[in-house]
Image (tube, helix red, strand yellow):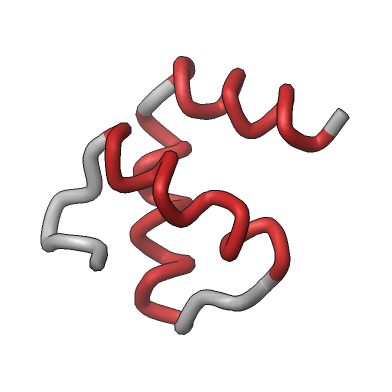
Length: 50
C-alpha cells in the first residue's frame, strides 16, 4: 500500500493504522519520515488526535 516515497494521499489512507500501531516497522518509518517534512499532514494527524 505504501510506496518508496510516501505522498500525502498515501498517509491519509494509513494514518488510522499508524495511530493504532498496526503498521509494520517499515511502514511506520515511512509515515514518520513523511511527517518530518510535511506540515500539512502533521496538522491533519493533530486534528485526528483531538
